[in-house]
Length: 449
Image 1 (tube, rainbow, N blue to C red):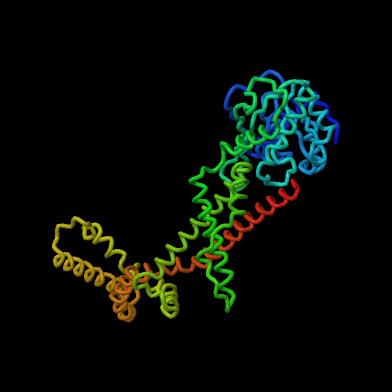
Image 2 (tube, rainbow, N blue to C red):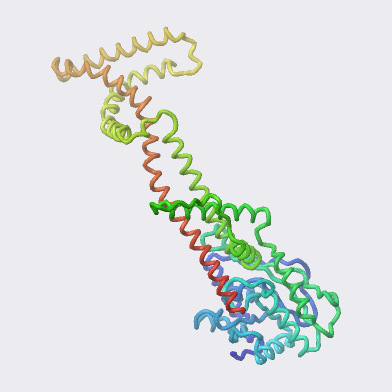
């Protein structure tokens, strides 16, 4: 253990430095309270989160009263992080249980000096907590400290929400809950017997009431979406095996996975919200890809066959100059018809009369354009130019009315493979995050045994 009796005298300077560092990184810390924290006597903050020097820095910076964090050495980060945490008054010790006697005496000195003591639920700093063990460290410490001090220690449960880096929110939330009530003696009495097991159970129940956790109804939808992603991953993997006959249709999450995710929901909800955001992105991309495939393959689209796709690609590219030539030839005609109100929806002329007007305007402009070409470039050029006018106009009509919508579908179909690859990458990312969470939980279980 590293000696550090109480918070250093210059801890205010380092707290201000920590606030500046969070502000420089675009992080804002908001402290929420369930009631008045001006309790007399020693105060212990029991945090329903795994131990980490970053979270210790958040609490040491955000709490109104001076607070010293109790941290295992493995959660202290590198040398610079350990140095900075010591300047904030952190107490480091080897992560064994029970807590060493020397560490306990230093915690007693901190509480006797009037500073608050911050204890994390998972003192191993490895991730998840085993059922019932997340509050045992705080309950054990309270029991032993009260035995040394001869006084009652006020315990406040604290919940943290630290959003993932990819999340839209950059705000770190810390919620100090109401005082934890002792089952045997009530909130005000000083017990002769601290009743560690009962108090640990009560504190564990308060941890499960994390203000930032995903609600049970939403948690059910989240687990269903996770099952869908896992089924898709299994189906894709099994499809590559030629003789594999097993189907992933009836696949469901195991009790171990479900329980581990529920543990994360109240011990580290920010991490679970990050996974949920990845799932939402996956569902959105999957839905978008399905709609694009339906639009491309549905109806009488020529994109259903390979030859139709090739023919449409060639016509879209090679026919564009011809359509542009037809547009230049008919630009004056379209302008005249537009000014005459021929394209208005409330056109009072009957359709037959309208077509006569359009034909007359087109023939008149054809004659003027042919006369202009003959005047400037001669009769031979006008003879070649005259037949191209109606043919370019007809092809422009075809290109705008038929090829252009199909070209849009062709463009959409070309984006489907890229979108599919993006969906695969996002699915693998979700599965990797899930595996990492479960591995952290298993390592935490092993370290607590």
